[in-house]
Length: 403
Image (cartoon, rainbow, N blue to C red; front, top):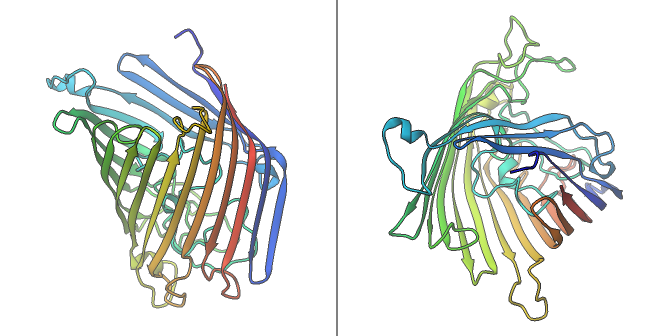
């Protein structure tokens, strides 16, 4: 109340990144900034809210590793407590039926947009079979095979979402659900019928689905209490451009199926510790790869997982300050079968380790400034042109601030 609901956020400091494979590599380092988020969230009416996130294109962003694209990362309107229009009475604190429409972050097990780690992604949220995993810089030439499915649960999606939350007396916690219908017009994978060197229309006109349900015990399950959850996605990815208008957007067809299914859990202890993680199985149909002309194509099957431990040392005598936060996360990908049978089973397997230390220099209702230190090391198996592993690391030290 009394303030224009607009915020700006960026991180300034020093970043050093390197990647190497098959005896070749590249290293980048220097002072700069990560990019810029312009955010606006607010309540228009008691039960009507909105959200906007704009990321302008900046040529010098990313500490010199690459310019940032300009995009409206999120844009949605949310209508809350729709159950009252269906004659269902909800208790104070319960929101049984809410509807969000636009482009938004999916209700993933643990939000990547609000993660304290700044430049290290949750690998399973973005992994795509056939595309070698890397982080800050692409590095040396790598082998790959075509996969028209670009769906990743970590990417903001256009669609409609129904959500609800209800306090459960028996568990002294909360039951939450999210059911989303998503469109494929934002897909950007390679499509059969698009000649090399030409620009073809991407995106389809089909509907995909995502869902997530959680039950907490003794609190919300992240700051206090414990929580368990199930999540999954099912849909089709367009594989063929429209012959009538090959450069038109969102008209590609011949969708072929894929699905994701997983579980998540969060445990808290002593008001200082939060251990959480997720495990997900992914399956891309054989026909996705047949459509791209891969000989003897087969389904791509894989699973990914991560586990993270956060420590907020409020009671440690040596570090008696509520300003510190320490985190460690381990991400992994294990492939079961490749869409292209000429690639090794363990091709593109990933091991990633992330360490983070963060000290909040200042916090208020209008500003937030934190000293941030983050280190990541990852290994991606057999993605080099000579079959070698890809090794990469990123070091970030800077000041993260928003106002």
